[in-house]
Image: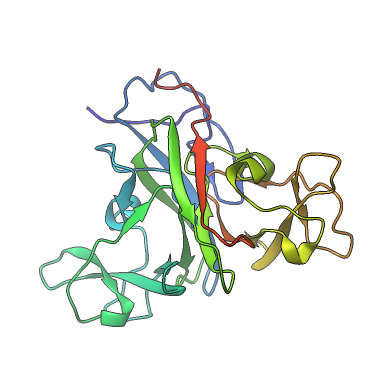
Length: 269
């Protein structure tokens, strides 16, 4: 039997900031986690991260299960409802989806580039990210749900090489984490004393609706760290990635990065 729970590990979280609700109810690998997301008013954007999985334990989840069917703004007109924008790293293009109710009263996602085609339930992998493009006139709260990850580690590949391809990534576990601890040189990331030779992360500030950029800096005397890209690039930023927050990642390496993130909590052991 599935339980809907919040753990002391920020499984209940808000994009932009997070808080914990401590409970002892988590007792099986079938626990279902949920996160509350604040979606800004039209035409605002929210950059979220996937760190919940299918309740059967597979390391991915369908958008319909993740968002449900009664939270996003729906419309029979393409472009008039809330859009979920996924990133295809191979083609370096967005694929956008919107919900609508068909003639039988069933709510499904439809590809905005094939609006009159068949419904779909796109699969999103743990540790990836997505945009919510709001078409709602007022700010609102929605809940995303899924199984709480229990694997000891999660592996994802970050594309690299010519043209410095963009990647959508997120912490695959539902906890707040320092960027320095999430991905660093020990994960295969590239640090440098030169901004033009280092890996970059672009974080989305939901309040200002603007990017804040960071580079992985190495000064030769201490471990590499993420530093905000400003006129003075040297200070260590100690920036936190909130539970359920996604980022852009681009690498200066020639070969793909196999990024492994280890489970940061002992549960359910």
